[in-house]
Image (cartoon, rainbow, N blue to C red):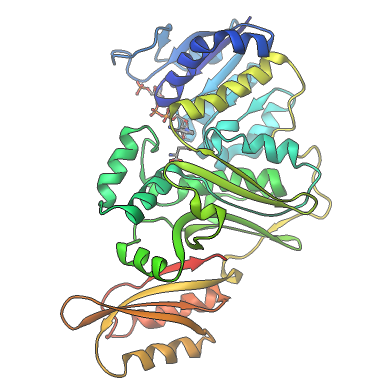
Length: 420
Ligand code: NAP
Ligand code: HSE
């Protein structure tokens, strides 16, 4: 028998409790031991719940209970969760967490604290997809050339609905919240931070990179408009929030942003709450992982797989995939040197000479225009939708700055990177 304490019995925690009961026999057979939930921790004990386990509001009742073998942290947040997980490890408990925000900031300290204790976090990236096992174990013979994916179910749900139906951003967000996909604070989803937290976790396993969210390029989906989908449609693209890691020699580019992706690519077909991650290894080539990236049951599936691993008592893999530092040492590439093709949406005065002025500004920064489309706006304004050939992030940023100084530009320009 293995006894589990669950800190946080909300969307994910309550699914864990129910699935441990529903699939009790197969889990017992696979783990070789029965798994019992000894206690759960919640903030508000008076809330009605559809699970029947002993509850407390004090997380330390779980971390300090000598009868509990595994502490499962499913409450979210960074500072308090860090203090609780730290205490569990100090008390020599095995830990399972789905908390990517915690890991985005503290994964290396936690690795050190855990030392030989099992510390598992499969559910922290891409919900039900076993991407951490794939990267840490299945692909461990490879240099990872690139990994690229849709890692936030809420944003993918919103972008899919916006591209297929006439629905507002706010309506779709509320639906994602109701379905249990969104974070407690959904700005983490729509502003790209949740996807960045996941990318940072995978970048540690793939490259041994110790970066924080503040160090990398992160843009969310708030500025995306239906017009951008019209351009995408016209030129054979769709728009996805991509998390991208790409290695160039000893440097790794890490970025999260809305991206125009050719419709023919597999990643473009990952719709709704689904996540999809493509990993390119130097030995294996491209592999792709697809599945539900959010929601109570999908996430609980990954959490319970970690509890089963611990119950089996086998040696868990090194927490972040490396037993010793990489001799060649990988560095984070500077944001300004990222190279991409760009799409821009400009609301401009619709009069002679404006296009020439825009082309001159691009020319000054050696940016070459690839395609262009003009759509009427209200009054004497027009929407210019254009894409560029490949150029550097620092040049497009300078060109954008110059454009915003012009009085014929009537709204803040929207820029979306293109990945082909
Ligand atoms: P949730 O529904 O908001 O549940 C959080 C739970 O933690 C609730 O039971 C809450 O108590 C409890 N809690 C929060 N703060 C507490 C505190 N200070 N003291 C005691 N209890 C506290 O969140 P969730 O969606 O299940 O997410 C949990 C974790 O899993 C997060 O780290 C999240 O990022 C991660 N995750 C979620 C998903 C998903 O699809 N939802 C997917 C992957 C990973 P009350 O019930 O009393 O409010
Ligand atoms: N809020 C996250 C998402 C949950 O929408 O993908 C899964 O990590």
